[in-house]
Length: 118
Image 1 (cartoon, rainbow, N blue to C red):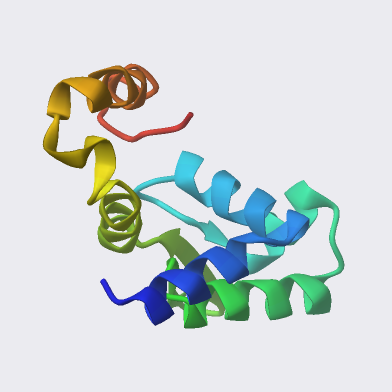
Image 2: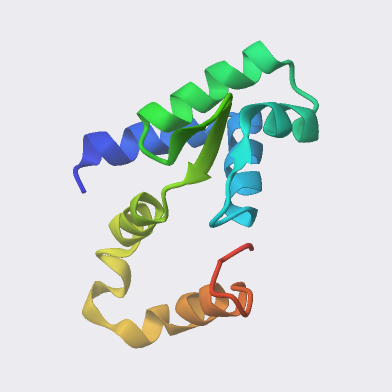
C-alpha cells in the first residue's frame, strides 16, 4: 500500500460520523446495510450520510452495491487488511515477539464467526 492511499483512508476515518459509520459496517460483515438504515442508526440526515459514505467509498474502505432500490454498503475487508498491514509493516523492527500481544488482542476481539467487531 502506498502512503497516499493510506493517508486518504485515515483522513476518511478522521471524522466522527464516518468513523461511527465504518465501525457500524464492520459489525454488519458480510451483509452490509442500506444507506438509509445507517443514517437512521447513527441519527444523521440522509443527505449528510450520503456524503460521508461517498468519502469512505472513495477512500476504498467500503463498497456499495445496488439491490433493487437500495444501496447496500459493506466494509471492504481486503482494504482494511491492507491498511492494518501498512501500519504494522515495520512493527517491532523484525522482532515479531514484540507484536505478539497486539496480534493476540486483535484475535481476541473477533467473534466466533471470524468477523472482527472490536
